[in-house]
Every structure is written in C-alpha cells, then in structure tokens.
Image 1 (cartoon, rainbow, N blue to C red):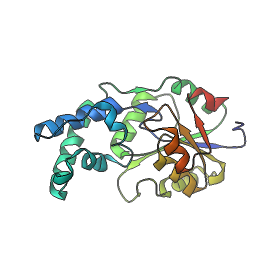
Image 2: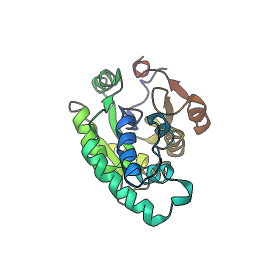
Image 3: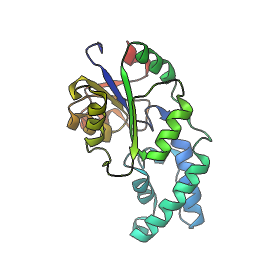
Image 4: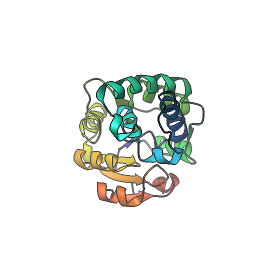
Length: 217
C-alpha cells in the first residue's frame, strides 16, 4: 500500500503498539483471587480487553456477581494493581520502534488513542517510546467518550490540522476499526494484536497487516 498520500496516523495502544496482555491479566487475576473468584488464563484476556478497564473488570467477574457496587470496587482494586505492575512484562511489539522512527522521518504526524485510562496511556507511551514525538496522546477519562465513538479521533484531526480523510488508523480490534470508519479515516488491522482477522474485517478494516514493518512498505 502506498501511504504517501496520508499525513497522519493514529495508533491504538494495547495490542497495537504494546503487548500489555500479561500485565493486564495478572493484575486482574490478583483482584479476582482476593475475592475468591475464578482466575482466567492470560490468553482469555485477549477478549476481555478493548472497551476500557471497567469493562475488562466486568467481563472477568462471574455473570451472577456483576452488581455495579462490586464492579466499582474491583475496578478500584484493578487500577491500583495495574499501577504497580503495568511494566512487569509489557514490551513494544517487534518492529514497532523501527516503524515509528521511519514514519516520523517521513513527516507523518503520529498520535495515540486508547480506551485505557488516560493516566496509564500517557505514562506508558512516554516510557516505551521516549524518542517518538507523538502529537496527541489520549486515553479514556474526562469528557472524551470511549471508542468506538469517533470523537477522540476527530479531536486529533482538529488538533493536528489534518483532515480526517488524510489519516491512517492502526488498531487490533473491531472497536478500533469502527472508530476509524466513523471518523472517516483509513482503517488498518494489526494481526499481531489481540483479535483475529475476521473481527477486524467485520469492523471495517480495509487492510490487515501481519507485522508493523509492512506499513512502511
């Protein structure tokens, strides 16, 4: 694919820039264990993530124990656990730092949009990609609605001064693809992430990649 006619790229964080699965899983499993609930295999968390941390918490709880008060309590515990353990196993995906360097050198405006709480999104991007000049970094929180609402993507377009149709959007879930479609951006699915090709295609992916290097051509 010739990406030269685009000027901006929005990246999802979990499952796209960073492999965060183990730290999310182990943090939540510790919360579940304290409450006497069944813990889940790490790979099961591939389908718990994607819609924000509170939804992750809700999905991991037994179906008959999802009262709002318990979800709120477990969310607070998960937030605290993850605050202590988000860097235990998390790493950038193979080839991602090199891709970001290449895209920056070519003059693309790079941004991040995640459903992870904003405070984690910012600190993790700065920790793992300290040399990448991301123009905008937005996570969940405040008045900005979570994906697949396109408000965050459109805000990035406004702040960069780049029309939405000049953006590529790279993510690993159907939520990301739906966000890109709703914003009028070009949706690209990351197969190295947490979901499969069928979900990405159903969400509207126009292109799917097996490795970050494929985006640079």
